Image 1 (cartoon, rainbow, N blue to C red):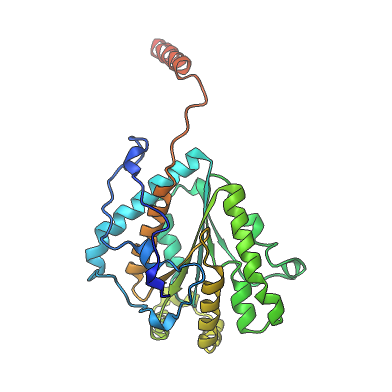
Image 2 (image 1 turned 120 degrees about the horizontal axis):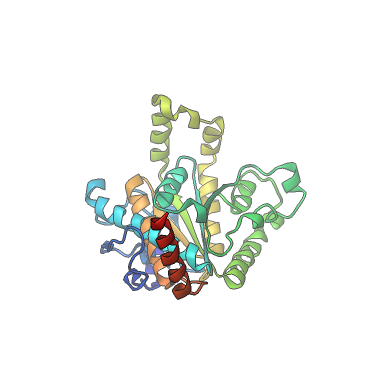
Length: 313
């Protein structure tokens, strides 16, 4: 079974049925390609990353041709996040994984451009501290999952404990292998007990593109702060990471928390595909603004009284 044989898991909704006066109301024009279907990994599927073109643009000829769609999806995400924050019944967890320089920070910037910061947080998971290592591997993750009404983006995540730990043999096989099922149970808990939607994106770049981005960092003084010795050390383990990613996709792409493999050699296409998947997923939640918690007729009378008083003073 290949990556591209999946059936749609979520049907696109219609944001026009929501409150007509939301900020920046604009009808989006989705692309002809359904990226949610195209890039989703079916539960149990065996994905071979070498068979997926990281330079795929799904028919888009250039960034310029995709600008209209990118803008409309970004604005739609902003409106739908507004609804999620106001409704306060559901939440969204976005997980980003990929090789160094795959573009995780760039995706974060694109996703949050039109979001209300009050309902959105970005969490970066670095090397675990000695305190973290004294607990189970999910101990440091659980406090950062979204509460109702929130969108949380994990820039790297709990999956480091089946990626880095595996590649560098930081724990015995029997320890990290059982984590696949523990992760599945953890994510199922978020979905079932807190109405959290979980979307996981693997940013798939080629080894050549990674090196080209390393070069740009060297040549551009504004990017040199990103340079790390670790990037080059980790690059030496490229094939081991590919194996680890493929096993991760096979064992942890589930109905309740699917993985998407996003071709990411072209930054603009990466952002377009992810934005479309997020916007269509949020649309399908059919969110609504809550009813006012006060008596509007009474508040209107108080307003008019205050207005009269203000004019008289």
